[in-house]
Length: 559
Image 1 (cartoon, rainbow, N blue to C red):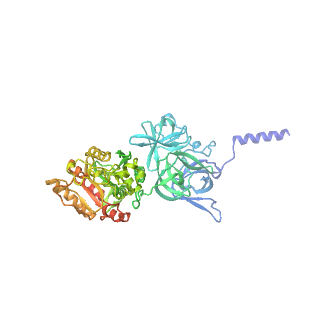
Image 2 (image 1 turned 180 degrees about the vertical axis):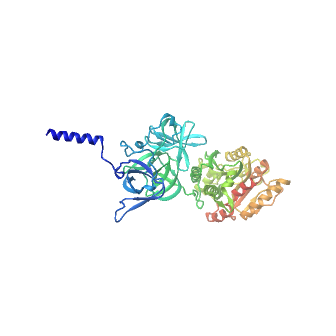
Image 3 (image 1 turned 120 degrees about the vertical axis):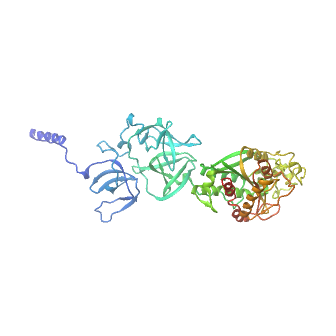
């Protein structure tokens, strides 16, 4: 018995001093490695008769379990499988017995001297994620504690990293720098799908960890993400050197077509469309309120472009002429989409033009009047007053004026005192008001124009397919304006109205031509339809005639 105990003790001592040989195939690696090329992840070993595998892309992170010759055993997306060792990048650090199957365990802590040069960072706790907009840091979501990301740069107290095709930030005080790291993968390859999505409600960015979907970050509504691929109910996006799932149900997909010009565009629909254009094109689009209508509706101006040369296009001074809102809104929508894709329209390079100019659209100067025509007297704050001006009739289809019966295109200080055919009291049309700019809508347009230096303007009206361009110009100005008017006429096919010695005046472009001494055009779309709205059936031909007018006018300023 004593001899047996001595033999056992000796065996244990020898085992501790000289541990058994471990072959390369049995050596536990337990570190993340990265595929260097598109390759195949096999779910069965090389000696299997019916070997199964799935393709994974270059840059996919896998957990190395063991390696033998040309084949490595790895864990990917919660599955154990096999990859050719030639297609794996070296581990970020040498494996050790204490390594565990997690990203943080395989990454050495950064020293203070390495902090400023660490290529990666780890969150000390949940941290707010920011995007930079107009020079300000705006909250965009949260990154979760313990997650590791690839750094882009450090600047002004923030760490930056890639978010889609843009840049995001966290405060430097919230992170610990790492000199090296193996970033977690944990998403399927999916089917390549490159587009842009907007977060509709607070959304989670997810990845597969130990066979379960785990949250790495949360994004706030309005954040834009560029998709790389689609997989089932998810889009796959890039963030901080990693890939993540975002649920399709939590996003809105970019379509490049937010305006439907083949239906009646109400004031509320116009606002929705304008805001969508700005949300999807924040690099070139912005929206401002330039005043309020009689009934308190905001008057909107959409800026499209980043250049210093400015052009103004407006519509719906007259209520029944609201098809012109469709024309202007479709211009803005199409131009913004073509800018993003670097596309052309009838030979015009949209991106090039909008980098040198800024187009300002005021698509509905008279929202109260338009609402009367489209929705009836109930749309007015003072229903009884509107009905009285309309002779008691609930049919407002012929209405041109604003809600209190003033014709807004007879409100501007351009020979206002001699305007003809004035009924002398509020009316559905032609009443010029008690004085120039008595109406808030006209005053808003007047003030907005004076704040800017528009090189040219176009006011859209209907109907008749004619163009007014002249208001007492002479000499070189008349020659200049006539030359541009002929180009507008050639594009639209509309006739130029011959100069008259005593034009009535009071119109926006009458005042613009006279006061700003720049070319201004009143463009009457559609064949003449009488005192009523232009039927939508005409829109297709109207659009074909006018689609590049905004680009043409802008391009003329930069020749």
